[in-house]
Amino acid sequence: MTHLLTLGYSPCPNDTYIFYALVRGKVTVPGIAFQERLEDVEALNRLALEGALDITKISYHALGHLRERYALLRSGGALGRGCGPLIVARPGTRLEDLRSGTVAIPGRLTTAWLLLQLFEGGLNKVVVMTFDRIMQAVADGSVTAGLIIHESRFTYPLYKLEMLLDLGEWWERYSGLPIPLGGILGKRSLGAELLSKTEEAIRESLRYAHAHRTEVLSYVKQHSQEMDESVMKGHIDLYVNDFSRDVGEEGIAAVQRLFAEAEKRGIFPHSHMPLFADG
Image 1: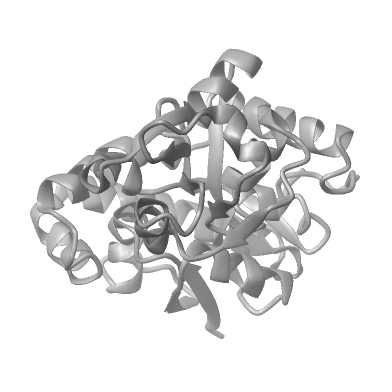
Image 2 (image 1 turned 180 degrees about the vertical axis):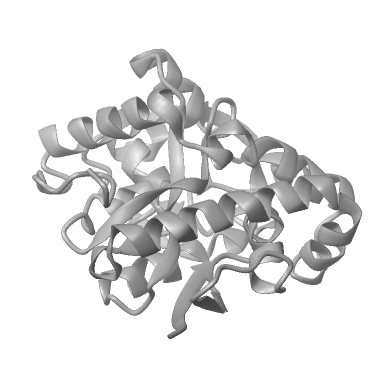
């Protein structure tokens, strides 16, 4: 019997780089087949809330609301240092202007929005838009500031914007830990054994990508055609790291600290479910 699992991930270079071998049959898992679905990370967050995907990339903020139904996998995620979301604005804007102005955010379930809430509670005037529209909205004055993620951290100067705050840097100083951005989840109902096989398959897919970088980058480019190649490679180098292979003890500590801070502020409820399917 073969289990057909829906696999959700974003078109961002780090995700397409990691999952290429798995979805193109370069890595196979006996008894498991994957049906891919590429969506913006906030769309994936929403689909996970609906229970629509078996395995999926999500924001760690979203995981705070999903722990009863989904378990975290140890491989494939985005967690690290120097890779957090930024708050950008037009020259002359001050950080305190956010309290009275409007801030564009990439989704209410993104870790970026969670971090901004932890840094500055009470920001009520926010507008949600896909991450690739935020910089232009800031540049043309539609919003006071923008909360940017992904490759936008490399390209915001092209819009003549300035960085007001690096939320990842703030989190690292505040917690002493790396920033957990996104992880890979699997439905608990699939069982620990199946999820463990999937976890190892993702790890093997990443090994393949490192060993066949030129081949994999051609797939990555298909989903980032409007992105400069140097930005694409910089994105992969920043977001694909040792934590992508295995979240490890330091990564787990970072996730637990992020959840504790969010629970303390009532952003999402406490859960007694273990982080991983195997406890």
